[in-house]
Length: 279
Image (tube, rainbow, N blue to C red; front, side, top):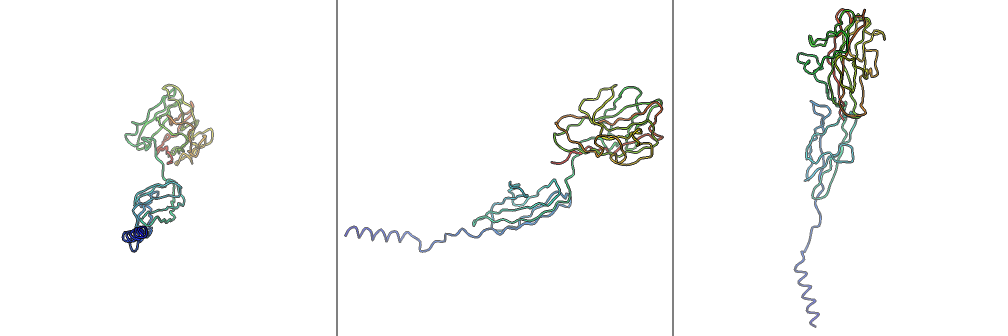
């Protein structure tokens, strides 16, 4: 009899401690949405505006498997042109939800010009060193926003160089504007080397591109991009990659033979750039 009483009492006590009804649901999942707009000032950046409701945490993806941001709203950078899938995962009391949309990048991000004083404007000479390559010195002057080479009678040679630091396996692009014409027995070269130039000694390295009257250019008038007017070199398109990181020397060198001439107005070069690609 006592056992029956105890069981009955326990049942009453348990019933008194249990709620009549219990809501075990976690709530609704977030309603996920966002807008993506290219920045007017930078077509490689996309402004993401999060318009999600019912969430307390966020994860962004730019097409890869790894998250790129955990901010509610952010701006993403895309260095290469192409179509990307941007995804947003939002987390709320009821779980997580996601949404994706396509973003189109029209162009590669412009690289960084690592050359200083390449515009040849006043003050540019502070970044360059004039090099005597042996024998009579070619006259090299900064004038009117250009670097001008004028030969000495009887033949001359000389150059101007700058030390740069490059990265391994990163693409670089050389560009420049050249103007001249009427040359004879003349060379005008852009060379890249890994050894420091020495005064009084000629310099050799990788000839990127050049005006070379023996190769057929420089005789007629020319005015344009080095890649278009040059005719002799190993990288006439201006593109080069280095197998090791470290210091290099970019040398602009010009000379002519004993009966040669740079032409009546010499050779000018300006807007020289050595652009490092964005990785």
